Every structure is written in structure tokens, then in C-alpha cells.
Length: 409
Image 1 (cartoon, rainbow, N blue to C red):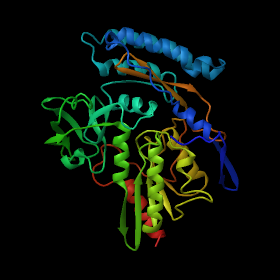
Image 2: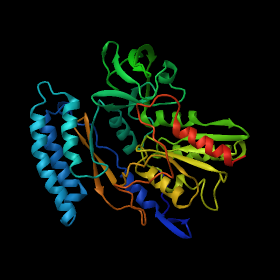
Image 3: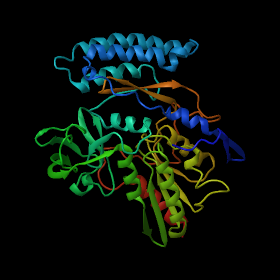
Image 4: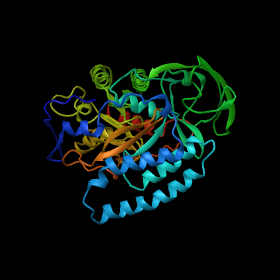
């Protein structure tokens, strides 16, 4: 997380005007409070109806919309909420026994979507996000440890797909690629956490490539905090690409939710200042955090890296990283290449439910002055799509490299 120094605003000049951003707002964006202690063993699993009831109770108590004046827009959303509760209760009643966790999550998150706000989501211990939230909001790089292979998975159309494969990871060595469809682990249906729990290695089966060829590999399993996994991925991503007479540096920033990420960014900026002619900073995917401190090495009088740059953004660029992208765009420091950011710009707070679920709720709509990104996001300067089904090279990265190669020699 970015350091808070008395809450002072950092001024950034944009088109002749200064854009002020308050460091205190970053704390609100993360709502960094340690999660409650683990619940007693008997609360390990809630039946679907009890889980839904707890979600409704917590949401109506803590979500900021329920504490705002009921103008037309708020009233419309709360009316949609009341109708969605009926639908969710009926959907949950159809899930058992035994209930399918993904069906229950779909029903509950369908209800939460009726509020139309970011930072409003239920996650389960079957999902990597559960372990990420525990580490992020607990301010820990290493706890709790999650079994992983150095890849991030998303649920699409009832299937687990590979969203990211981290540099130097076991997943990369095994041949997994973005967009691949997971089938099984040790002959059991794939799930991104359960597949690796209690194992030193697992035989994975997945479909890959345009021909959807079935592939198999025995993949070693690591145990790390999610933030530690992402920090290693960030450190391993740093490299320089030669393109013609240009030497173009690359660094991914998966999240800005611990000081170690800012330290890594700053060290890389210093190194690249002497070893490159331009730089690509990748803000796609991952989590939020970040904010003005992550723009400071590149913008303003104290900038470390002053050479040409490009930023990669997509719908996975969210929360505090959208703030970082906004500052680059507002100050015309670098073109944003990719697709619009998430528009996920509220203060979120986690509420543990038993030991298997975390409810993330938007508890405040207060953002930094002059920055209104919720529901809007930041638009790219150069639109380049990269859908999950697109195979081959990364077109957003290639566009950035080609552009910088023409202007940075």
C-alpha cells in the first residue's frame, strides 16, 4: 500500500491545470482492516439459505447505498435489490443437496449486482480471490499460504480458463497459456484451489490452442501468499526487448497493495533509466492499490524515469491502479493501450462469513477530488482488444513496443 504522509495532496499537472489527489483516499480505496479471526469449526460451512441471509443482512447494514439519501437513482437501485432478493432466494433453494458452491455464488452475486456498484462481491475458499483478499486486507505478503502453480484462473461459461500465466512459473514451464481451458487435476474436475491442496504435484489436463488439443503435464505445486506469488511474478517480468535501434523495458504491476510492489517498481525504474530507451508498464489484471505513489517515479520533478513510455490497460485494471492510469493520461505522460479500465473505484471492506466465504462490500463512494472513475473507468488512447479466446502473441504489448520503437531511438 502507498505510504500515507499526513494525508497531503500530491498535485499533478494536466493540460495546464493541476489534478490534486489525496493520499488518504487510497486508504479508503483499500479499506485495509485485518480480517476477523477464524470462526469456530462449526461455522466452517453454512447452508445456502443461511449464507444468503447473512449476505443480505451484512449488505443492508454496511453497503453505502443503504445510507444515502433516497434520490431517484438510489431508490431505483434499492427497488432492484428488493426484486433481486426474491430471485436469489428461489435460485438458492434449487441448489441442494449437496449444494454446488459455484451455483450458490452465482445466485448470491447475481443479487449483489443489482446494486450496480464495484467492490461488492462474495467469494469462496474455492477461489483464488478469497486467499488474495485475506492477504491484501491482512497486509501480509505470505499469509495465508495458498497452493498454486503460478497462474490465475477465471470462471467463464461454467469452465475454468487461464487468465494469466506468470513469468518463470511452473504453469509456464508446463506449457499453460492464457485462454487455455482446464479440465482436470489428477483425474478429478479442476478447481483452482482444491486441485492443488495437500499435494506436491498434480497431473493437469487442459485444452489449448486453436484446435483445442488436449494436453497433460505433471506440474509441481508451490505454497505462497497470493501477494508473494504476485511479487515474484512482477520481479520476474522485468526485461528489455531490442526492437531495431530501440531498447524497450517491460514491467508488469499486478497490484499495489503492499509496499514491496512500490519498492520493486522504483528499483526497476532506476535500472531501466540507464538500460533502456523506452518502457512499457503493464497495469492489466491483478488487483488495485497503487495510486499516485506509483506514478511518482515517472511524473513530475522527482521522476526517476523520464524516457518515452506506454501503459497497458484492460478491464482487469481496477481500483487504485485506475488512479495510476488516470494520472498518466491526465498528465499526457504516456499513451494508454488496450481496453477501458474496470470503472471499479469505491472503498471496499471485507466481511468474513464463516471460514469459507468473504463478502466484499462498497462502504464509501468518496474518491479523490477531481477523479470520478466509478462506472466509467479510464479510456485507452489506442484501443486494442485481446479477448481470452484470441491465440498467439499479445497484441497490446506488440502495439506498445512497435509504437515506442518508432519514437525512442
